[in-house]
View (cartoon, rainbow, N blue to C red):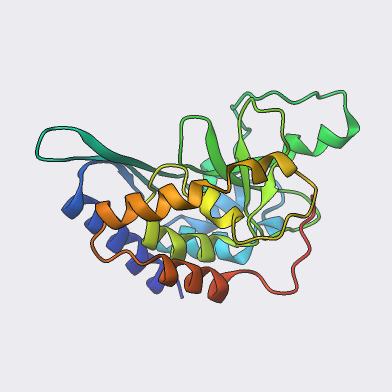
Length: 227
């Protein structure tokens, strides 16, 4: 399984470099698992999908852009997949959360996994709930993380379709029913139209229908988000 994750990540990196002006800042070697288990608090809480990712290719950091013939920027993208040991380090991010609010207390164990934007990232909780799911979070927006119903392997499968374009996780939200937990996230469902149009220009082989089919294939079944 780890070998397939490594293959996926290498394909993502290669395609970004083929299609775009891309800078690869980090391409991590597989994790030293024994060392990490000895250093991190409660390694037994780490989802197996995260371990498989770290055993395969522990970290990938790419920024890219594409211009047209006249030099106009057609699109930009970012993949900021942390190393496992950095995912579970003490978070150094800041955001607009009222720490005195009991509902926000759990944010202290919310760990960044992929910084796909300047203030936007996917992350997961590290506590006894052992929640394998990733959540979308926008720093300083005053909103709690929103579940994507994906583990890290599923997220990487979709990343192969999107190559980290823009704020691509918004396109996932359009595929989920409005559960009323964070209705503000539903305000941007029109992002899907832009996402489809831009991706078809940027990536010749992109198919929105294949993206949706991939999400349906990899989304977590019988999953109850812990937030």
